[in-house]
Length: 269
Image (cartoon, rainbow, N blue to C red):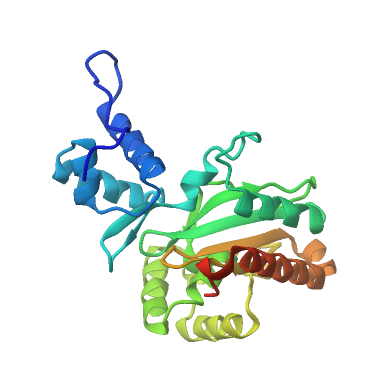
């Protein structure tokens, strides 16, 4: 594959840290090619050692900036990359589908906290983007924060699309990392809750993961081969309870609209 225009600049004229330069060169490579690529293709295009390229790409996967498809052995940028410049409102690179959806949900549900999350590592759930509540009393979390999958509503709904054998492994790993015995989950009871999530199509924490707070989570319809994403609305239990049915209806309606607009490129998970 011929080198693309994003080949790395010469570092002898600047004080650029090599790892930072290579990271952005990889992201610029994807901006130019607009497709998934293997480690060999990326290393060749950027004229980087394949071993160093492999280590860098693995690190970016671990940080949720890239996704890796084991079947095709190819990498592609994650939604987290598109959200990096979301604060620049006039940017032509803004991911309008997901960030606009979050803002629409924020307005439609009275300004509650809106959350977007994705699995990270073997058993963690990372918040990729957060639209904070407009209320003084609110559910507070931050983009980049990682929590055990079994301890979040978004983690629960992400787990619901996995086979039970894989869920059991994640439960055991989260429980092993949990220092408080009372906070560990019981496998049988948790799997029963996962089955309820599968049937109704959403998760609900109800104060079980964060005392006093309730979050309702649903899967985001995504293009084929993309890592699953979950979206949620959270706030104090009493306030969420008062508009629970409205929140569920609005989330289901907006996610369906997202699927309908995207057409055949998207799938229901």
